[in-house]
Image (cartoon, rainbow, N blue to C red; front, top):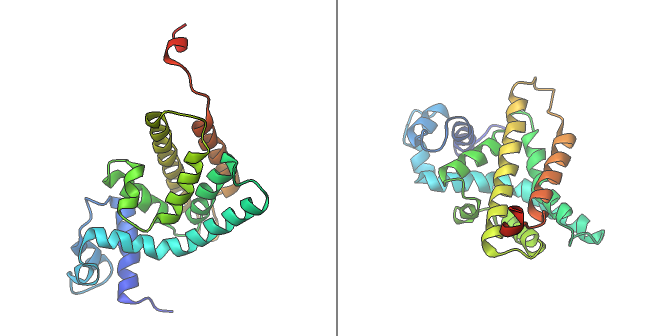
Length: 212
């Protein structure tokens, strides 16, 4: 089925944001690359760059969030919703599956958005559309060992940055493959879930004892 003008602009914006960065990509560039003779087309449909970013999230997250809810239900039915590893899997696996879709630019787009907001994972909810991921992130934080707030915040920041960066690399690998090939998802997904779980749940070292 032929894409509408709005969908074509969305997909083009996602690709250009992913490959050029948010600041380096203008609405006029997006309109032109989407084949629109009217270079104000992106502005007409989305008004601002920030609204276009939100629209890309809305466009992609319906499928990703449905998969995330499915994994939450599976963990809940298995009595494992209190285990950090399984909650981290809920965050990682849907994004990893998207990263291995042929022609995907979404995870690199997400990485570009993270760069745009100063690598601050906790600022992502301000853009909107990421409510499901934020809710799972809160479940993970609630199940961490007793940490002071600064340490919890730092670990959550690093975990989010690691997930996005690692899966953006996985998605990038796919661009070098033929349309019938996909990067090997499972080893990367499992290694990443293990690494993030370890980062979040590692015991706290007292500053004094670390020097002895």
